[in-house]
Length: 184
Ligand code: SF4
Ligand code: SF4
Image (tube, rainbow, N blue to C red; front, side, top):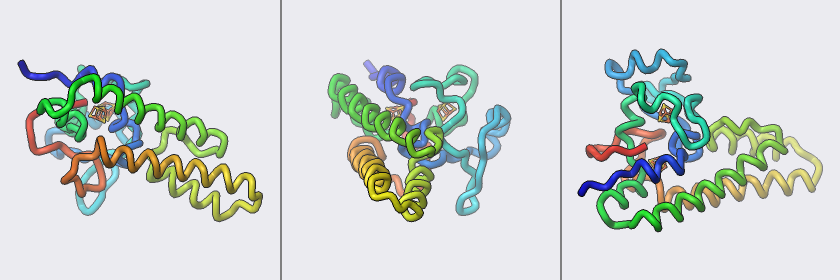
């Protein structure tokens, strides 16, 4: 029986929140109607993307899940989903890794509020904003706390790279994987 990754994705949502990727690739022609629901689009290297975190994400759930998400959303599979779908990882281990990643992500986003950095932004933008704050800050204690959040983001990124980012992914954003397994 084919495995279903929806339990994993419904506990996660990290590929939509901007924590893993700053943007997701648009499929021109197929996504035009879907993009009418207010996606923040941007061009990168001549290709169209929409910015993450996605405004349709609520907790770990997609508000337009049943109404036609952009193609990248239904076609993307993170490394963890791929491992689970292929039988290389059991659900219990996958859920444990998701739990750890979600906890790390939450801790970073909670800390961002104390530094007046928007928690809805993607981690790449957040890191830039924190670096700018660090450079402008004179108070050693505030510098220390900003530095700690930056270290926490780096730790999250290393964890995400190991367990979630597809190995061959050298794209600047989330892309449809070259296989037909349904993910988030
Ligand atoms: S595809 Fe991976 S990163 Fe995205 S929601 Fe599912 S488990 Fe999380
Ligand atoms: S699955 Fe939904 S919440 Fe996630 S990026 Fe796509 S439209 Fe946004």
